[in-house]
Amino acid sequence: MTTTTQLQELVREARERFEASATAADLENAKASFLGKSGAITALMKGLATLDPQQKREQGAEINLAKQAIEQALQARRDALAEAELQARLAEQAIDVTLDGRGQRRGGLHPVVRSWMRIEAIFHSIGFEVAEGPEIEDDWTNFTALNSPQDHPARSMQDTFYVDLEDERGQPLLLRTHTSPMQVRHARAHVERHGSAAMPDIRVIAPGRTYRVDSDATHSPMFHQFEGLWIGRRVSMADLKGVYTEFLHRFFERDDIELRFRPSYFPFTEPSAEIDMMFDSGPLKGRWLEISGAGQVHPTVVRNFGLDPEQFIGFAFGSGIERLTMLRYGIGDLRLFYGSDLRFLEQFHAA
Ligand code: DAH
Image (cartoon, rainbow, N blue to C red; front, side, top):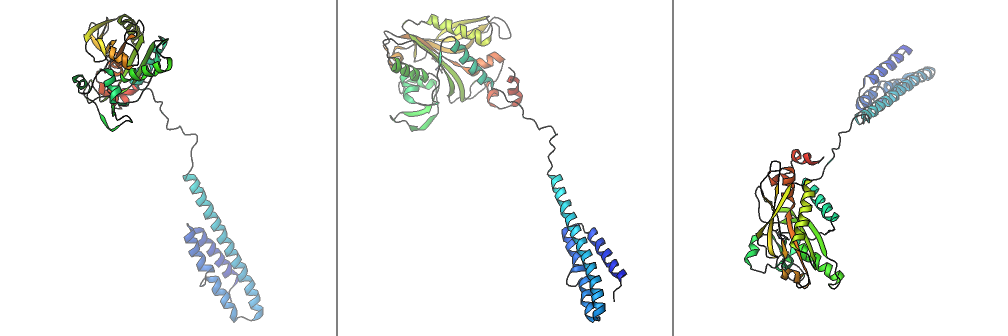
């Protein structure tokens, strides 16, 4: 016979063991000691067999109540553990929406891009179109059309990167060494569109990336130029000087700048000049600084535009955007532009 007190004691013990189980696995082990095949309740049930019917009924009812109490306690603990686990997981994954963000810092424009945009805006405002063309250029447009025939020594002024391909006309392809081929592309398209009889002047700048086998403090294998071209029926070097002077004053936002044309040689111009400039004040005061090649477009090149050089004349120039940017901001080493050093680049974010 098992007394009511013993049964109550068993239920109490089960509750304690269940409470003390910290995990679902512990709890299932504890359950086995009471409700399992060889658990205490099961053993008591088996013991009923030896009792007479009256006792069996009474004892059976009591054991059943105890069993139900233990099952309830078990279920309560299961629920509690599941709830605790859920809470723990939620806490772990909690997002504190009141926390400050890590912050996205605002980027900025690269100083060369700033210059590029300024150059476009200035020339646009004085009546120049803006054109862009391919960085992979064909040999004819980059050299031959610009009066540098194959094997002419002037070609070695600009060593370049050849691409292992030819275009559809069998022309070798290369990374353009200057923006000058854009003179040819733009002028030919212009002539095709307007015809030469009543053609409006060709007035264009073409900024972009250019490439040469060159690398030191003032040369980078990739660099930027902008080409200028003005072709009409009576355009002169005096117009070139006027346009370029206006550009420099506006680019540097100052008037105390002097210009000089120094004789030079380029295959695509005749006469050719280097444009030098000088500031009349500031740290660079009094030093002639070379900033651009220029000249009157060579008759052969005008003919390659599809125009009669007896009727059409004009000037071209090609200037380095890095060079102008270095002068504007006082930057001493060209390689700073391409080092991706944020300490350098961030100085221009508010410029
Ligand atoms: N293409 C020349 C260079 O990269 C620069 C140049 C010189 C461009 C004279 C011109 C020009 O349009 O007339 O060195």
